[in-house]
Amino acid sequence: MLIFQSVMAKFSDLRVGVLALQGDFERHQYQLVSLGADVTLVRLPEDLRRLDGLIIPGGESTTMDNLIDRFHLRQPLYEFGRVKPVWGTCAGMIMLAKAITDNQAAVQPLGLMDIDIVRTGYGRQVFSFEETIKARLNDQETELKATFIRAPIITRMGENVKPLGYYNDTPVLVAERNLLASSFHTELDDDTTLLKFFLTKFF
Amino acid sequence: MFDFNDKQHKVKVGLAEMLKGGVIMDVTSAEQAKIAEEAGAAAVMALERVPSDIRAEGGVARMADPDVIEAIKRAVTIPVMAKCRIGHFAEAQVLESLEIDFIDESEVLTPADNKYHINKWPFKVPFVCGCRNLGEALRRISEGAAMIRTKGEAGTGDVSEAVKHLREIGLAMKQLTVMSQEELYGAAKEHRVPIELVRMVAKTGKLPVPNFAAGGIATPADASLCMQLGAEAVFVGSGIFKSDNPEKRAKAIVAATTHYKDAVIVADASRGLGQAMKGIQVTDIPDEEILHTR
Image (cartoon, rainbow over all chains, first blue to last red):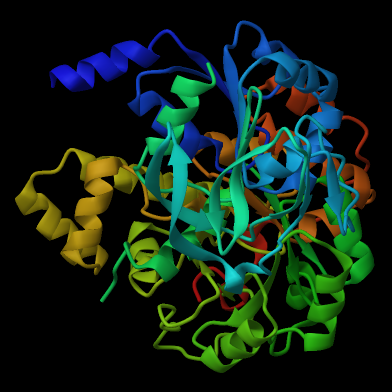
């Protein structure tokens, strides 16, 4: 119980936003609340004010791209991500990327992280999967239960991008400055290992 | 028996989670699918005829031609769903072989089996099923559905049945959360579902899979209403492409679904959309033409 309270106290000062235009933002909100963080669902530019960091969740990147422009979030999100911690999961990773190869739907990513990606790199839903992957967090080998849902694949990494986890020799968890990106989900389970890593190391 | 920790099932429910807060639109061609994608649809439902046409034309309604489905698949990058008849597991197998992202075992098509639904556990592709009340929802979940939607009354443009179904499910779930163990056994019997599922709902107050609204949604305010009544996303069938200005209406319903609590944005989205689908009042439909009782 004491440990639990100290964890809650540790994260209770953090004001974390979750982009809530579309996708599994409630799963992230649930995990953040379970750690005691102060959560804001971000749907308009003014919601970004006063936040210490942001999670861009999974969902449909074409839908997010569309709503980012319609509700004037592109520039505010870009400026936020230049200086503050942002973690993109799945569609969120697509939005952080510099370029999308094979970009049939003409999604315009934010271009914050020096990676290129291909969307639905593993194939359609019947090829979605869950796998335990090994990641290097805090200089320790850590196992993560990773769910890949129509997941993107990283096709290029800039020299300042640090791979932290691999699946089948492909980087699936990467970091650059204040940015973290994962092509998989951990928020679908109750395991908050990766979220704690983000809140501890990037804030 | 059901196992919610089964990896395959978790991956199926995972896609349903990713569709939350979005709009899934019925489309009958590649052109319509592109319009839906550009408007911000989170997924499309590939069909030969939208529900209002099925209603008007009558006859047996079946799974769409694979050529129609594949043309739609090629046109967009968002997930593509397709409908099979209730109990028609062979149609479901065909849709799975086409690598459809989600199958709707739908009352909008003519049921193939009047007694049994499909056993959905062995499939790699996730299923969504319609329901009118908590018992139906939990029976479909026990058969392996990865997403539940209200039945509403498809092809009418009348949202009243969807509202009724959302309210019934919401109320029944609330009731479970305050029941004693003895009462939960009674509820399981009354709803004709396994006690384990009843206990899960009693503990969380929510279904163990995402719960979407469908059937009769035609305006941005309809979408906002369903979301405020507890739906986690909305399906729009005939409501878009049977209206005057499908592009504008599709965009408006997407905006209203994301900002469903913000009446100012819903009001803006509702401006100048032209005529909504004409529709038909559910109370004017003869009993034998009602779809939600299937």
